[in-house]
Image (cartoon, rainbow, N blue to C red; front, side, top):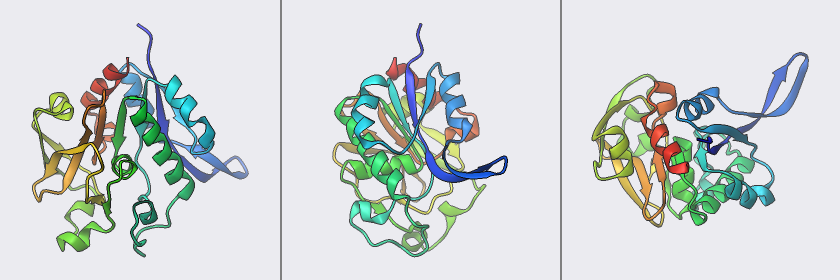
Length: 228
């Protein structure tokens, strides 16, 4: 059985090799490794070339909207919080366009961390720009602190991972208003949304945590199976 091509979004950053510092397309290998273990053929998508997006979605079996820097507040009509790093505008623009094209084409989407926020904003939703202000604590932004996530068992996510998962997922932003066609399907104990799904789509799942870092391939298995 042939492996479906799975596109993975990436950073565009200055990088050093040998004696050179150059702008480079960067992607943590954990995404590609997880896709490969699930039976997909990973390809990294540089956040440039907006005219190529329709060709990407025609040629790809699925898209991973990967994690990274917080989405710029201007993409959902809010003021940029000074505590949030400057947005990566080229990446934001590219990934929002890619998400919209993948939704239109019914191409399977797995949106992770920042990627979940991209999917939500691409569908007209909004984000909480600085979550600790809303909760009056920094529980969700503390690195290395695991917490339990409740998952709807009737969702695609629930069918893949069950009704409860223990995750480590530090984040400063979160979903506020859900975008068109999206449902919340996973929540932390304080009811912060940690998983979303696109209704009527072959596979459109967003999660706040990073299973590729935790060695949990179940959601990648379900995603790649949908991409076949």
